[in-house]
Length: 271
Ligand code: ACM
Image 1 (spheres, helix red, strand yellow):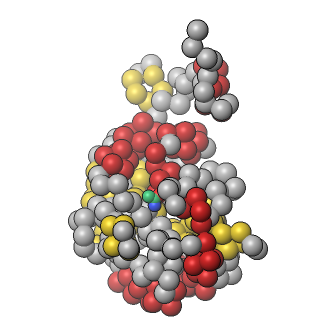
Image 2 (cartoon, helix red, strand yellow):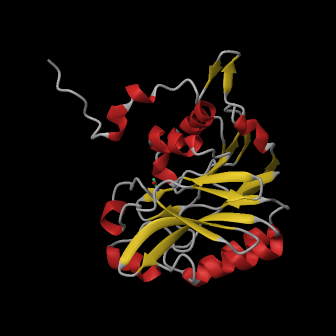
């Protein structure tokens, strides 16, 4: 199986220009089964206020951006995962869609909002699902979601082979250090597709990467250049959770000890 990322710089507020950029880059990409694009690819990131985000938001199933992704996925025979500024009725979400060559559209809404995103978007309300595409199971996390080990675990417990991670990362180098560890601790492939460029006060950090279930960086991009890369992987490697002859990453868990994770997380007051 061939998976990869497209690292580029969407243009804030210009939906038509972003469709053109995405069309050109997907059409120019090497043959792949799965390509991941950055967060908020249809719209850009640094909206000044909720109205500006709303003006760029599109229906995840019927909007023009998803229509383009469906057309490209079908013509290229490639599943695409892309960030999307989503409108659902009067609600706006920082979302991503997984679009297959067969025309299926699977949305995910960012669960953990970063900084001023809290003024612009509602937190995700679709859970942290996995999607079966052919023989592989795919999960999605969006950018700052990477900080939450619980989210990675939820995906690996549901059998994700590949975690797609559309991003607009701004904290230099942090996610790029942590993602290989999350991959290793959950034995999943990860594709982080980050963007480059600057919008107002934010500079995006590039360095997109593909990581193996053993935490090896299989491919990585520059910090400040457009880049598309595709690597060959064997998704069956993500299904081997054995650590030693007597240890299994998932089977050895002790969920009865972890209840605090699903409560408010504060645990008992110190004595
Ligand atoms: C981020 O979540 N876009 C930093």
